[in-house]
Image (tube, rainbow, N blue to C red; front, side, top):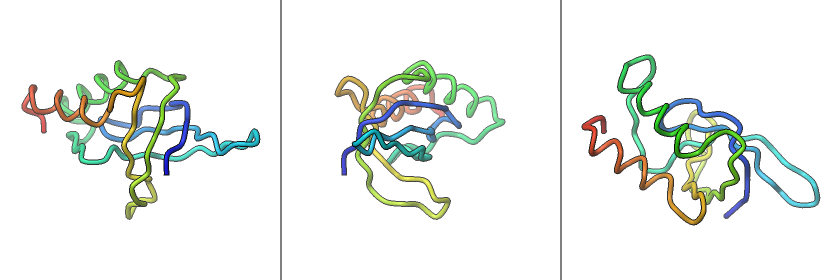
Length: 102
C-alpha cells in the first residue's frame, strides 16, 4: 500500500521513523527500513556518514510517500520512500555505492 507521511527521525543510514497519515485525522508513527538499502551500522564512521546523508536527503518534518513491502523481524516496515516523486532508496544506494560503503 502507499501512504503519505512526515519524517520524524532518522535512526541510521537505512532506517527512519515516519508519522503516517491513515486518513480521517488519524496518524500512526512507524519505523521504516529502506527496501534494498544496507547502510553500515552505527557507531562506525561509515554508518554515521550514511545517517548524515539520509538526514540531508529527508530532513525532519519533510513530507514523504511510502510504499510498504513487508514487516521485518524487528517490527519495521520495509518500504520504498519517495520525496517529490524521487526514490530515497535509489538515492541512498547510489550514495553508498559511490562512497564504497555499500
